Image 1 (cartoon, rainbow, N blue to C red):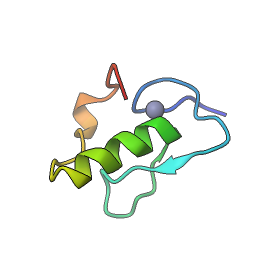
Image 2 (cartoon, helix red, strand yellow; image 1 turned 135 degrees about the vertical axis):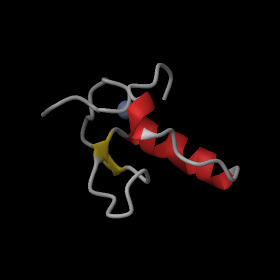
Image 3 (cartoon, helix red, strand yellow; image 1 turned 60 degrees about the horizontal axis):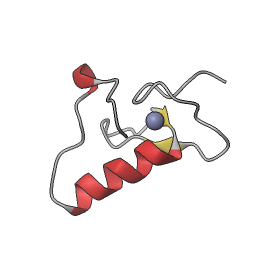
Image 4 (cartoon, rainbow, N blue to C red; image 1 turned 90 degrees about the vertical axis):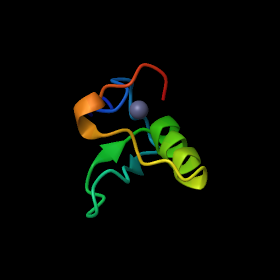
Amino acid sequence: MSPCPRCTGPIGDRAARSRTTTARNLTICSACGTAEAVRDARGLAPVPLNEWPVKAP
Ligand SMILES: [Zn+2]
């Protein structure tokens, strides 16, 4: 399996769908999925694709 494009870490067996695209067709790791959910809950936009990979998910 290819690495997580958001943090370059392993995606593992709990893949998530990134909120950066409306289609949510980007697979990211569960840590990044959680990080995006936290940002969303705080009213922040997801880290844009052109700033990937991020250091700390
Ligand atoms: Zn990740």
